[in-house]
Length: 102
Image (cartoon, rainbow, N blue to C red; front, side, top):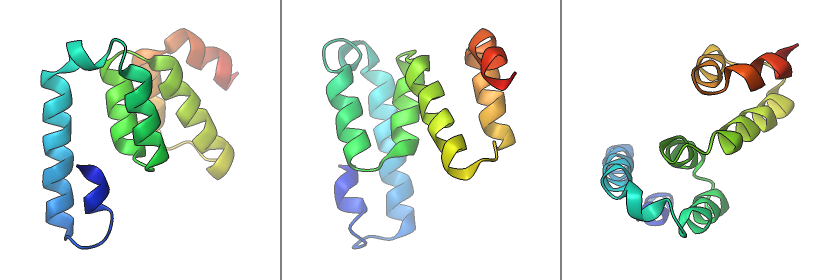
């Protein structure tokens, strides 16, 4: 669903609609997607460069280790930690975040 949007054949509004539909689908089907299929979904999203959707899914299924790892990798790339990242990490991983920052 999201792969076709990334080809450039559709505009930004179509991308927003597709992302919104994806998030709605994942929310409504979380119980089915988070069992055996979790790793497959994460691999597909990751291999297609869908970081936003990957983080959304990881948070939804409470895979906070993956969320934290993603943000640590971003920090290594950009060195600076955006405030939204800090807020997200604090809300889910306070004890891990405290160890990482110090």
